[in-house]
Amino acid sequence: MQKENPVKKVNIICAKGAIEDVYATLVMGNGAVMEGIETNLFFTFFGLDAIIKSRMDKLHTAVVGNPALRLPGGLRMPTLLGIIPGMESFTSWMMKSEMSKLDIPPVSEFLDLITAGGGKVYACKLAMDMFKIKKEDLSEHVSGVLTVGEFYEQAAGEGSHIIFT
Image (cartoon, rainbow, N blue to C red):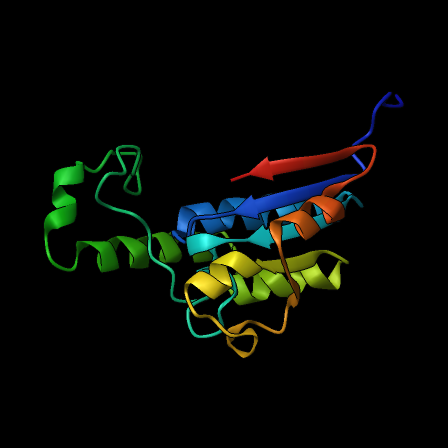
């Protein structure tokens, strides 16, 4: 069955740097690449951590203020437990361990897959200026540093969608 209005391009914005937010971007981006859809990932604000060489494979999960956080087995973790020292590190380790069991690659490898498939990765100029991040701090997967206006130009076209994760 042919679609009337096929998706031709996806432009995914990642503005948060927690594991769950970054992986939402990477999974959706990789899925688009695998479907043959032109894919652009735009990392801004705290999402920049996903493309900074020294941070990309050391992301944490948000514990405090994350009422949907679940432990393996599906039990919800009360947010109050997040104030216990070491809980964020433990929860992040646990998340990465469960992801590894499902053969979900670390961020750097996920970016390898996406860019090898033709996906493009961009950093936000404003956020980089604000946080004093230099281009040499970024992963080799980054195709360029764009202003918001340049991102919108990149996102233009019929069949193009912008997704905010």
